[in-house]
Length: 454
Image (cartoon, rainbow, N blue to C red; front, side, top):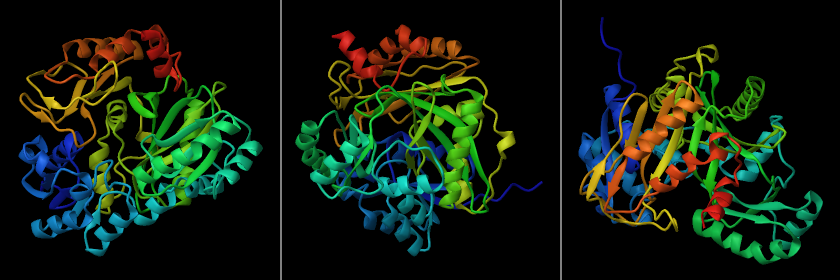
């Protein structure tokens, strides 16, 4: 029997770190050659060493390298690739880049530029969600013109509200507002933060849910109208809107709520004719009502927990969809088995959460049944200060949530990184917390946890 033809012959990976390695490994299993791009600061990075080819695209500053569209497209032309995988972050949700890739007769491994435009700008996404009948919190469906319009909207919605960057994501450009004075004082600061992060200072106003869970639905859709959801991830353990720990499935969802959330997510995908993998994010309140937050039109950092409970390789599926193949599974074939956790090991001071670049002088990575580590670090690797502080993702899978917690505790005890400070001690404390073990937590858990710790 002849081997199946690979979806592409050669792919360029427009990213770095652990996600670049994750894509390289998926490509190797599909018999696809890979090209790594790197900044001069990343010359010794593992993705550069493991790719079939590597090409430097600029100096350390992201805007001169990993965000430099022309450098990346030039590297693609020089190396003769057929497709570009953007990973997450950087250019992964940039509609202009996706369109340029298409104009260069290459394949963007992700959704169409039109999908990204429809869902990337948050007020536009809210309007589409409402059109698709997805439950939503009260809020403006377009960016407010200024602080006066924001005040008027907040009065109508009722405090507390949340100011959000219309072009935002990744937890930046978000301010919780509890009264009119807070709104007047914070509007300009929030707008400036949004402009610095996304090049767009536009803001919208939404009702703030005090003690919710943050639960997201993983979707996969092909160009033939096949749309499937792969359960959910609970991402409520976060600091300053940045996720720290994820688990699948969510302990607060019943099968009936899961089905309703999945149906809502797929209705939105149908409305925008979505193609690729993606994530529809929801807030779940204390009575288990759920409300649309946003859609991420890319692979998520936390995708491994879904892979662990479904047995489906999301990166490979994303590549096949981009190549024009049909989904390799149906909704009936998606079965959630057991429980999985992911913790993000960052090069940060566990007390202050300040970044801690430097050289790794000793490293021991945990292992064993049901333990997975996605990382790019190695002994003597120098952690550079120019990028996200993520060093590794530690993922575990058990038959039950209790078993998975025990497995994670053991794995965290085994994980040794010396030379730089990491957030491993914080994760050990969280997994020892009774509130976490009993799943009595909300998005405010870390804030309250840190207060108790001091």
